Image (cartoon, rainbow, N blue to C red):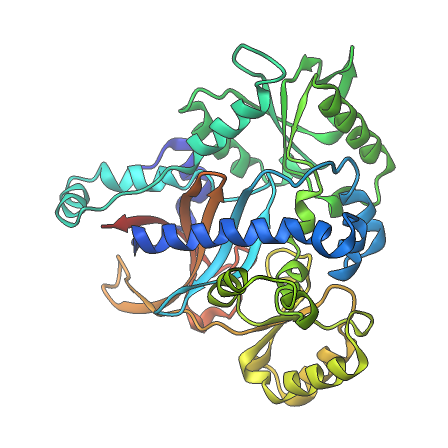
Length: 419
């Protein structure tokens, strides 16, 4: 299998030895549920908190300073542009977190699909089994062109912008994204937030006027950087003036917090949902609750902690805003004492979530010929049009419980659909 040169340099050493397969109707139905779930989620500030997004942030335990930064420039519900991290338990997909925003990894994974299909033996296999795949990059390119519509009638000038040091630290990843976008007519510039300027109301990157800024920095990366926050304010002004479009604002990150999933299992919030909304929640989101004592009634808090202690082996404790599994405590991998200490110290946006056991995915090692079981974390992209492609990160259970590239045993794979 031959990958495009830049993608091979970026990911060639972390590929699983086979793609994964799923019924197209199943993954499309899951994406449809994600769309419905998101619609409910973004309605909650108006339905329950008087239209006050900051009040919603307090309800999900978000740090006040971080919330203030995320809410800068928030005007309407962000466009749906998201990637679910999900486990399949053998019967259905379960949503572990919904990454909402423009800074999504894995969008260029269809490079793997095409490379597989260039191998004659696999192409024959794919034809016999009716395999297909959906490339996420054209969906992203389409969204960027839509964002550029009010700014320019020509081919837009688009730049992917990271935080200070972000491009340098992960340049291989962004070069692969740029390579994939070029295949769909997007010439993607790469830059960091401190390289942005402003001329005649338009944002510039190293002097080049931009029509669209594809934001890859997150609020936490600029929280302690007043200069970067000034640039953010300039971006927001340009977006509001229609001179340079920002795709997307930091407010999308509010809904990426796992605290937003926890609200769906809060008794008071559930009482405000319709039966059809509750049905979507209950077939999509495993039981998830916020632990901060200030966000629960005393009786509810006491019962919640007792349940968490009793059900340690079936629960996972994790921060609401976080990446790569940092700060996660897996209940069945610690003892009662360590678990009790973790629960007692949990505050802010920490959530506890029912553990989903992923179905085993058998993989034949290409060198040894041995078949081993792997666990898969499915990345399911969804936008306003529904299912927008997928990819997988996989890990042998013996190498840990957190399936993320922060774990060196994790491998990447693409998804083919059947049916």
